[in-house]
Length: 127
Image 1: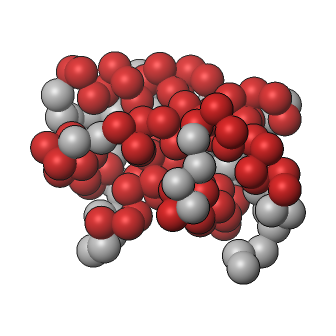
Image 2: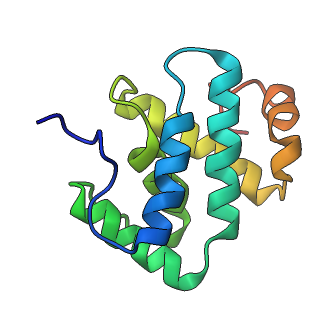
Image 3: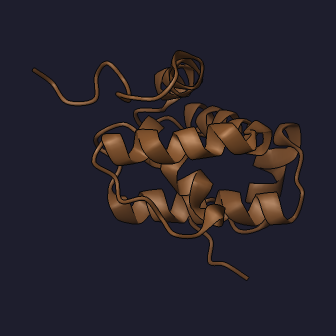
């Protein structure tokens, strides 16, 4: 049996379906697909309710992830649950950090790619 092919286990079917949709958009290696995945992950993070955040923490824990203590780590949990297997933990951290910065700057999902590119790209250092 292959791990994580069917998506996250545990939690409600509505949140699991939203995460599965983002996971299907997760790129293998193409830049345009990568930005599409970032935008969808970012949009989900911005739209989560308090109940869905709690559910996300439970899903993350059920899938072997360590649940962060701070609530600002929601983006990291979404990245962990939707990223393909080839994405290394260091890259997941970079992605989550950059998307969290965008959220703090109140960037709209449709402007996310332009904002990331104008701030040094997804691998750019935090300012």
